Image (cartoon, rainbow, N blue to C red; front, top):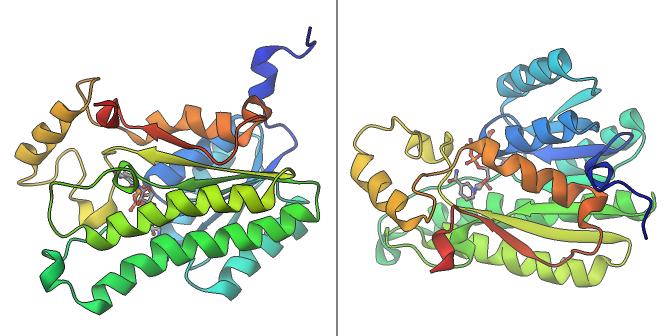
Length: 266
Ligand code: NAI
């Protein structure tokens, strides 16, 4: 019989986390989850103003030491610098969320420009690779850790909405990278992914926001696809974040966890 209390498995006291895309939406919720569960955290993003807002909030509300790193996840040097700063200033790296992503609509596949395609794949696919690579190097030197990638339900199924080819492809790649990297990095490093459904955030120029003009019919259609009769909020991702970051998920790796209100169950 284990002597560890179940709830203690979820604590992150003394751990250090890094979250890309932490200035907004789901990444902000991930950073909040880490700090609220006891970890110190580096917030990485291209949005420096947003970073300072989130950092200020976390410093005011939690005991976490919070570092900010202006880092474009498509830039290998910037990702490496964010990881290095985390190790140097916070004392290591235990948890990394490769979360930064963009979503663009471009018409259907026959009218998608190569430039638009590459822009999405660059951030959503290459950015996740670079974040996994740099995090894994640091974790290997420090006894291991947990990497959590943000995929999407659109990495598991296609979309009725045309124009999401690059996005769907990039998220399918995140699902497969998660499995492959888990195989390569175990047993020291666990690699898992979350696959959110529709979550009200600023992604895609704000078209997923609850109050996005003209989006009511689409939101209604998407709400009906869920089994919980609502679309998601960033806070809905906090529980899975703490689970995957912590010892609570110590026997989980190479898995993709839908957090989608039941969207992909049927
Ligand atoms: P968001 O737009 O609210 O936040 C994304 C953050 O990533 C922003 O702060 C942005 O500045 C940052 N970012 C963008 N490009 C970057 C780059 N090159 N380097 C560093 N940071 C960069 O969007 P949201 O919804 O929170 O998206 C987070 C992740 O969740 C993305 O990977 C997205 O694809 C994924 N996702 C979102 C869903 C949703 O319904 N909102 C559903 C499924 C997945």
